[in-house]
Image 1 (cartoon, one colour):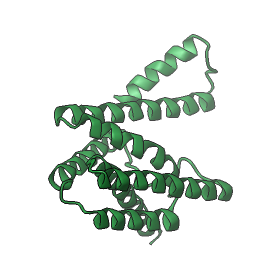
Image 2 (image 1 turned 90 degrees about the horizontal axis):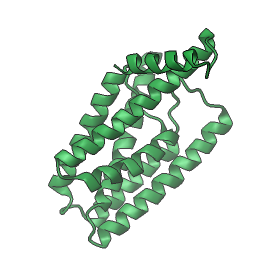
Image 3 (image 1 turned 180 degrees about the vertical axis):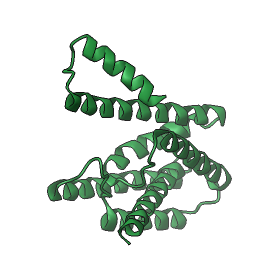
Length: 195
């Protein structure tokens, strides 16, 4: 579906002479369109899960934390758009389920421990490079610093909100943990491929 939509948009852009019809140019724009459509679909799915489960504010908070951080951390990527959209929605649904069961029982110390563990993973393992977007050493260093800063920022917000009795702070911490798990999965996949 995503490929069909992006191909139709691409044909329209070429027909309108907005972009060049060379293969290299078409492939470049096709990839950009596919990523954009998939990202929009992911956002819509997460918001729908939030609306259906009566956790809309939590879904917005998750996206506010997840999207910027994931740009700098990298992590597991599914090999098809369908798998990507389904796994993203499933992971968020599990995160919401765990949140709804545990948010009132999570202590400051547990939140702090999750924040520290996430930061250790961010510092030591980020960024996880995507084969479609190779990074220079300078970019890797910059992404690592930004991932750590953003992660710490969201983590501190999460802990402070929970201390102030706002349960939404737990979503920030759980999102950091989820991103950490996606980083670990990607690293394990890389090790398996190298063997």
